[in-house]
Image (cartoon, rainbow, N blue to C red; front, top):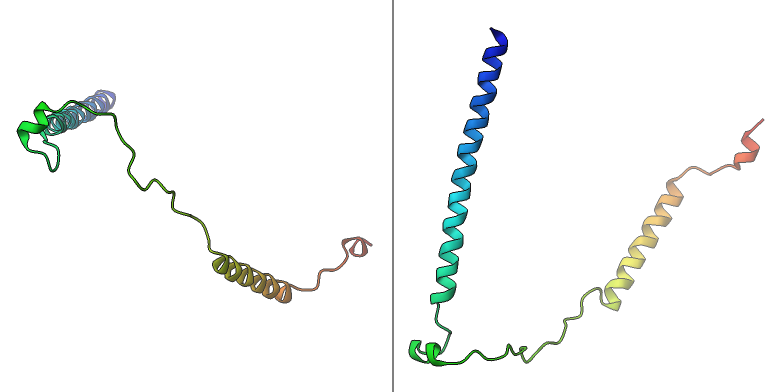
Length: 107
């Protein structure tokens, strides 16, 4: 009898999981459809609706400022980081006990 109850529990769990997944799927489909409608019906900015429908699609032009912003560190920042790292290494070296020669420990 215990096996039958376990099997029924598993079936119930699977059924509820399937119900949840179908709900999620239907919501995603609705969102995708709404996004498609919004994308196709949205007029271009700064252009009237009649002009937007009559205009021919033009080649995509790159924006005027396509300069890549410099990423990374400034030289001053790099120097600060290097100084901080050296200070940490020095503190760690000072705090560590004197390392003895591993060969002399073997007797």
